[in-house]
Amino acid sequence: MTHENRTGRAFGFATQQLHAGGAPADGINARATPIYLSAGFVFDDFEQARDRFGGAEDGFTYTRIGNPTNSSVERRLAALEGGTGAILVGSGQAAVSVAILGLLQAGDHLVSASSIYEGSRGLFLDNFSRLGITTDFVADANDALAWELAITPATRALFVESIPNPKNDLVDIALVAEVAHRHGIPLIVDNTFATPYLLRPLQHGADIVVHSASKFLAGHGSVLGGAVVSGDGFDWSAATSGVAHFPHLTEPTRSLGGRSFVERFGAEAFLVYARDVVTARFGPTPSPINAFLIQQGIETLSLRVDRQSANALAIAEWLEAQPDIESVDYSGLPSNPFHALAQHYLPRGQGSVFSFTLRGGAAAAEQFINAVELFTRMTHLGDVRSLIIHPASTTHAWRSEQQLRDAGIWPGLIRLSVGVEDLPDLLADLQHALDVVRASAPAPAVADLVSEAR
Ligand SMILES: Cc1ncc(COP(=O)(O)O)c(C=O)c1O
Image (cartoon, rainbow, N blue to C red; front, top):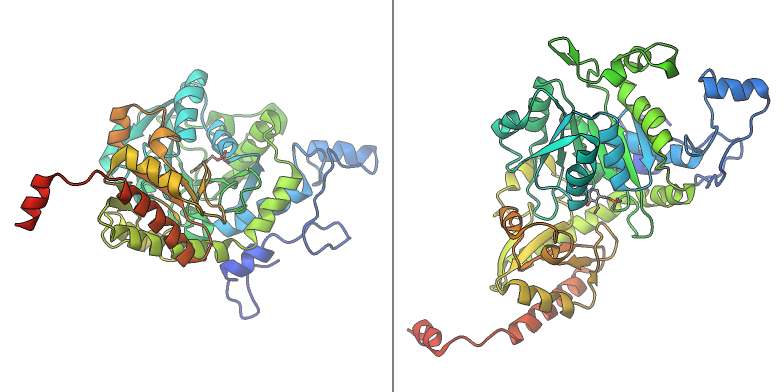
């Protein structure tokens, strides 16, 4: 499919989410991409087997290396993100792992915003550290100097999330990209919460986008998946004082007959390496059934995200007006410190995962979460159904009290992932939970009542 309509204008997002990337050319012409549930693919003859392995002929060999259903999702996601290509993997964690392992090796250093998903933080602190890849965190991701100070001669990537979890403390992607590029290193953006419908990080200077496709992309809470999408603007032969930053991409390699990935693939060197050398070897390939369900989800992405963002904004406004609520961390609210960044980066909507803090602390949060009936108590997000969780005792439980305080994850903080239900039903559920908290709040002391009366 071309990317333009008959008047020469680029197709809109809703058209692309249905059609971009085309269908597999298998001569059967099923309208929905079929699930090619096969471990491998038949070679016509000896020569074809040899040519497919040798790269002289394009085509499928074995599902761990490529599969028509998975490739169809990859083409569509690449188009939606404005990238040159994508790799579909089995989960968001696998996507972050593939991106990092495609860039960094033992002795290298990563700098990440500290406000990121706990699973990614754990991956950096507990897993990559054992492979000799160290990570430092930047507390204020919008402070260019803080990034500059954290970067060392060994730094090989910067990492941020487009809408951080759970505080919505948005990052100025162009600002971080500018710092990264000044040092000849790429910026990786986890775009799970925004999705390419709300934000395309590559257009703002990012070089690699990763996703948990388990969330909004699949959308229905039934499958896990992940994706790595690459842009085409980064120079993979970057070097400092003659030392190549990515020697695995610039040095001759046996698999390319003595040529380097940069020589052979230019701007696509990282993506080809990440696919052929990282994904194909470590093997985080998704089942084509999951790929099919992710593609089904992508086809309604904009409709769901529009509705979820509208519901979330209305709920955030309602919560902000409640006296028992101390603060609401939603960048769509004019009172939010990240509202100006939201207007620049998220003009279509500010997403639907955010937190709010009850004045009553942990006890009130517990009562509130136990009282909801429509919201589902669950550690997931981006689902069509509305979900609720208490980060301090679940997703962020491994953080020390000081780290929780530094991140603004207070005992009374609750995270919502707002779904597509009818808004009045969601508000009624939240109102009921708040009534339960109010009913059990300790009565004000007589002295307080007297001073209020005065
Ligand atoms: C921002 C973000 N990135 C990555 C992941 C990991 O995704 P998965 O659960 O698909 O491995 C999550 C999971 O919640 C997430 O919120």
